[in-house]
Image 1: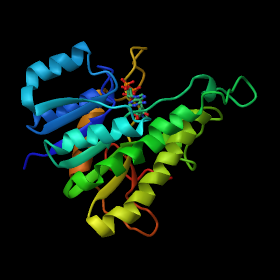
Image 2: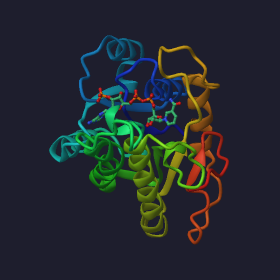
Image 3: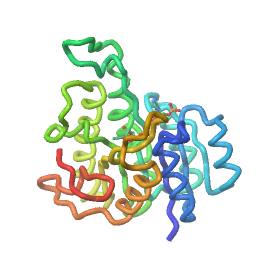
Length: 239
Ligand SMILES: NC(=O)c1ccc[n+]([C@@H]2O[C@H](COP(=O)([O-])OP(=O)(O)OC[C@H]3O[C@@H](n4cnc5c(N)ncnc54)[C@H](OP(=O)(O)O)[C@@H]3O)[C@@H](O)[C@H]2O)c1
């Protein structure tokens, strides 16, 4: 059955958000794509190609009123089967090593967009989820305390670690009570920047895996948090 999917962070054409939207659209699903400024050429193109199946939504994850307004507008059109929090932000100076230029001045925005923004959005959508909905966040290995190897990247890593924590907590609340599945997904190393493409996955490849993983998520155990933080292909990642 065709699904209604809401995806955040579609502002960069080579970003993962657009690749996820294209994949879901190609399979005949209704896709809401959010970004702060919807007036962009690639959004226009998607709209021209997919018509009523693609609905751009202006939403700033750091602004509660903006998030509530977006959720209310979506609710007038459809219930949501799959919500994907893909948006991210990080401050370059906040990611420098602690003893080599790390600045805490603008660190709160990454936390606001990645972690608080995600729960702000989930809360605004709570009354509009379809039965057995999936709530997924695109997280990162950078937020894994057990596996991340970097000695810098505090701004981004802390924000993603907080996002992972949010997903586990939401899962514990929303799965038994409402039957919703909550996932934190590391998308792999993805060629989402125009720099030399050293990353091993194209956005399209990562998106294809993620779509399949959301369709058939791994089993989870509420105790032990297994099956919540996974990678693009559904394998357990580990906090
Ligand atoms: N590329 C990789 O190898 C890799 C690895 C691990 C994890 N990830 C994760 O994968 C996801 C996608 O990566 P990407 O490189 O494609 O992302 P991206 O394009 O850098 O960021 C996604 C979007 O976040 C949005 N955003 C920023 N601030 C926002 C705000 N206040 N409100 C709403 N949206 C906001 C931006 O849209 P607007 O500014 O227009 O709103 C942007 O389009 C991210 O969550 C990233 O952390 C990527």
